[in-house]
Amino acid sequence: MANDFIKEEKVAFDTVLEGFEDYLSISKHVNVYRPDQVTMERSSDIIWRPVPNIAQSHDGTDATANFDEATELAVPATIGYSKHSTAIMTATELRDALQEGRLGMAAKQKLASDINVALVNVAALQGTLVVKQTAAASGIDDVGLIDAMMNEQGVPNYDRYLGLSTRDYTGMAANLAAATRSFGNSKSDQAYEAGLVGKVLEFSTYKMDYGRTLAAAAGGAAITMDTRDAAVNYYTPVAKSTATTGEVSNVDNRYQTITVSATANVAAGDCFTVATLNAVHHVTKQDTGQLKTFRVISVTDGTHLIISPPMITNQVASEAGTCYQNCVINTKAANSAIVWLNTVARAANPFWQKDALELIPGRYAIPEGSGVAVLRGTTEQGVELVMQKFYDINTMKTKYRWDVRFGVVNKLPEHSGIILFSQT
Image: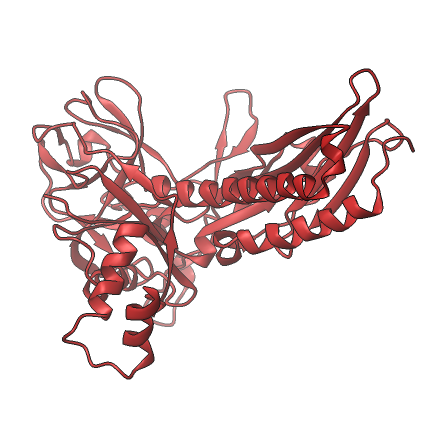
C-alpha cells in the first residue's frame, strides 16, 4: 500500500501506546465496561448500566404481606467523547525521525489527559458528597471527614480514591513532613523528600495538575424550599416509565426537579444542604445526624432546579422509597432554608469509590484499502488508540492523526464527591 507504515513508524507507535497507557493514571482506578460495539452502534452509543439493588427486611416469620416487585434501577452510559490529535510532516521534516517521535509523544500525552480530565470532571461535577473545610488542606483530619461521610452513608470501604490539586496535595504533604513529626519513618521521610502523601486511611491519594475550580455560589441566602408533603419536593424511584402511547422506557433516577423560591444566580455545580434534611445510611436507613449534600445539575427556570441526588425521603411511604431512601426530613416547613457550601472559588478535589465511575471504551471501524494506513493498539483498560497516515503527492506532505473514543459515566453519584478547602 502506498501509505503503509514503515518499520520505524510501527516501532514508534508501540512506544507511544506504551506511554499512553502509563499516562492513564485516573482511568486505572475506575471500573471499565467493554460493551459490544455493534450493539452500541445500533443503540446510538447508549447502554443502560445497572446500579446495586437495596433491599429491605421484615420482622417475624410470616412473609405473606411482604412480597413486592423489586425496583431495579439503571443509568444511561454513553460513548460520547471523540478526541483526536493531528500533525503534518513535510518531506524534509520526515528526515528527522526524532521530530516524528516527538509528535507522537505529544499526541499521546494530550489524548491521555483528555480521558483523565473527563473522569475527573464527571467526578467533580456530578459527585454529590460534599465536604466543606474552612481552612487549607492539612492532612489526615481532612481525609477523615471524607471517610466519615462515606462510612455513615454506607459507601463500600475499599477501592477509595482522592484526587487533589497540586496546592492542596502539597498542603497535606507539608503536614506529614512537619518538624513536629518524627523522622526515620517512611511516611514522614517520603513526604519531606518527595512531597508524597500516599495512602491515608482507606484512600489512595493522587496529585492532579488539571484540577477543576468550582466557582463560588451566587444564589444568595434567601432561597428556600417547601419540604411539606403537599409540595411534592420528595422523590420516589421508578425503574420504568410508560408514555401515553404505551411505550415503556427506562428512567434515570440520579436526578430530580425541585421547586424553590427563586433560582437567580444559581449555577450548575453549586453545592447545598437543606435545613433539617439529614442523610441516612443507604442500607440501615439510620439517621446520620448530618445534613445531606446535593449538587445543582442545571437551572430549568425561575423556580425549578434539576439536582442530584434526588431527595428520597420516603415521607409518603412506598416500597421503592423504603428501599432507596437516602435522607430524612426532621422538620417539615414551607420555607426550609437552602445553604450553599461552595462559598469561595477553589479547586473541587474529587473523591470516589471505584464502582461509582465507569470508563466505556469505544472504537472506530476504518475500512481497509481506503488509501490510509492504520495502526491500532489497545491499553489494559480497553481504550483503543488509532494512528492513521496519509501522504499527499500534490504537496509532498504526510498527514498523521491519533484518535481515541470513549465514554464516562458516574453510575453512583452518592458514592463520589468533592472536598473544598478555604471556604467561609
